[in-house]
Image (cartoon, rainbow, N blue to C red):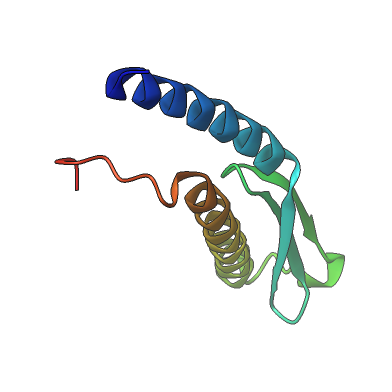
Length: 103
């Protein structure tokens, strides 16, 4: 088989693996909290949020900014952890692929 044929097969196989991993990442979740657990965020490893829970004791109409900060912190932490997992799993699909001239 020619080199280009082998490369095409390898690329097709890698694309199938990447699609499988992306599908799996959509169902994997991480949880992050802030404010001592007052805000809990569940993030999917595909970069989307699955849920946000806010303890009713964290609701203070006089101090909305604190709640906003807790939500932002929990969301950013959750998405960061999810991205780290996604990068690691996608990296395992592409590792060892050396395409001359690309990198």
